[in-house]
Length: 81
Image (cartoon, rainbow, N blue to C red):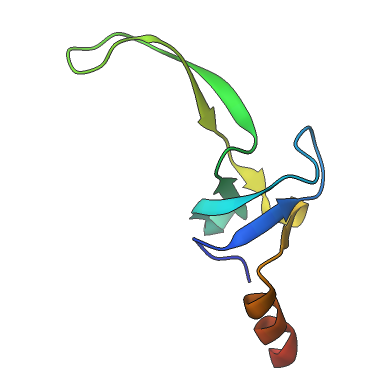
């Protein structure tokens, strides 16, 4: 099972074979955000607190496109099955 803080590898898409750490999980939609993977450009309006402009940020990836590479955790989950 993929959880926040674990290392995963992306299997498909433009960032194929890249590894990163899970920073957020959306369980109802089966998606996760991985640090520095699947970066998208977001246009932000200027507000009183922040300056506007174009910002790069992580986007969600479907869990079926990820593989758990943390060996200790992967062995434990396989042993439970």
